[in-house]
Length: 160
Image (cartoon, rainbow, N blue to C red; front, side, top):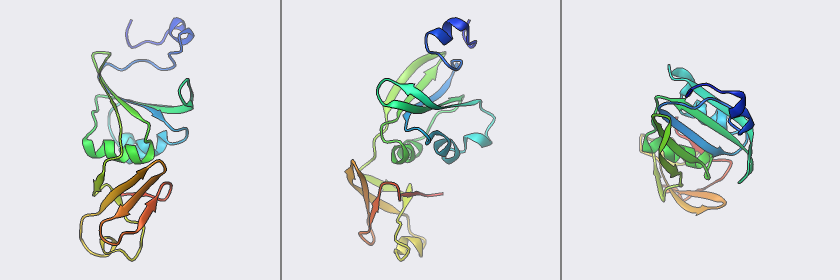
C-alpha cells in the first residue's frame, strides 16, 4: 500500500506519504525549509513538494523536512543547502527506498554560490566570479578571495 498514509503509519510517526523517486532533505533547522525550497525553485516545477515544518527530531529537538518527487539535486545545490542548513542530510529515493544518503558539508572553496557582503568588493562591481574560502564551519565564516572580507553566518547571501 505504498503511497498512502494510514492510521498505522501515523502511529509509527509517518506524517506524510512516502515518495517513489526523488529527494528528501532532512535535518533542516526549523524555519529554514521554505527558504531552501525557494532557493531551489521547487515551487516553480511540476514535481510534488512536501514541506514539513517544526517536526519533532530526536537528534535536534525540532527540524524542517522537504520531500520532492522526481527531482535530484546538483552539487551546486548541495553547496547552497550547506550554507543554510549545515547539518542537513540528503536522501536519494528510488522505488520508495533510500538509495543513497549524503550529509551536506560546506566546501573549502565556494565559487559562484555565495556573494561577498562587502559592497565595495570588485566581485560586486565587475563581472568576475565570486570566490569565498571557508575559514570556519562552526560558526560559519567565509573570506572573500578578492578583498579578504569576512562573511559571517547569518549575513551570507547566496548568488541568485
